[in-house]
Image 1: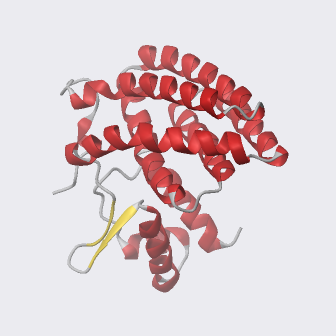
Image 2 (image 1 turned 135 degrees about the horizontal axis):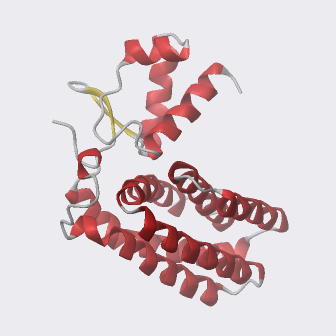
Image 3 (image 1 turned 135 degrees about the vertical axis):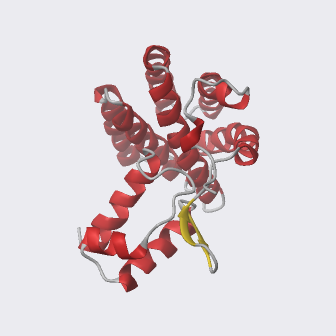
Length: 225
């Protein structure tokens, strides 16, 4: 990978794992020095990240990590099951054998992951492989944007309740396996059913945030002042 590609991949990782929390200002000077880049390629990276929903560009406020406030969460909770179900259905219909191998590889990474950040990143990759299977240029941007917030919510809630999260992760792995089986069988209805069951699990993990549960660390999930 080129220095530019390495920088972009690392910024994605840092955003997904809350190392760069929602609302964080992206200091061009500091980041350019940190990654050994000039400002021009760094600004190109910012534009790429903005196009995918990782950051926001503003003439007045510069570049900052996409916020994750309560207004965004309400939209997330209403949109996620619709988008995930549509993607799962099309993945079962259009997947290729090579993509199935990629999905099993992603699943093995999910099983092997034990640390919070690794779990979130492995899950992020798993669902992106499914989206690739769907081969739908209309759904892909929405799915990608949802998965950014999904990863950040996963990290935030896992750090607040490790014991609860371990149990949920075990169930999530089982759902992944059932979803792979449905996709391999080219069974769209089963793929959707498993996906919705999986979403119910995920929603249960995140419910405390919407309910105002003080346990999750909301300080890293809200827009910066």
